[in-house]
Image (cartoon, rainbow, N blue to C red):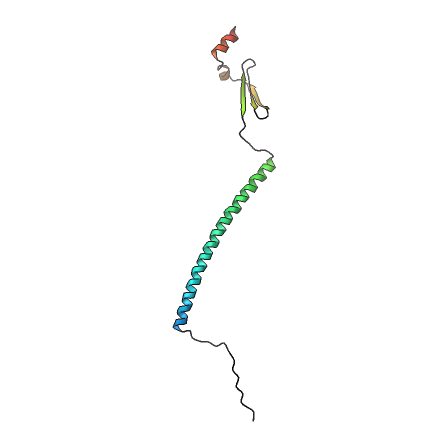
Amino acid sequence: MKPFIRKRRMMKLKCALTDAELLALGDQMSDANAELNDLQKEMEDFKAQHKAKVSEQEAIVSKCSALIRAKHEHRDVAVEEAKDYMTEWVTVTRLDTLEVIAAREMTESELSELPLDDKAKGDM
């Protein structure tokens, strides 16, 4: 005759949850859902901030790239416009480099601007 042997062990078996366990799981799920929503909002905010920073840097790179490619930019530069009534010419000179950047003949309107004292002296 073979002996009868009993052995105890653990097995995973289907068990119905109690009302208290269901209520506790509902609270846990609600807390986790609230935390999840907060984290998703933080992530969206971070992405938006990060995207703005990336866009800002892309704009700088684009601007610098265009300036390097062109090798110049337009700036406000002080100039002097000189009207020579003896030669009837107008010259425009950059004051930073003293380069003459434009020269042209005076218009009829500019010729008529000569002060009266100077016209009288020129007629003599």
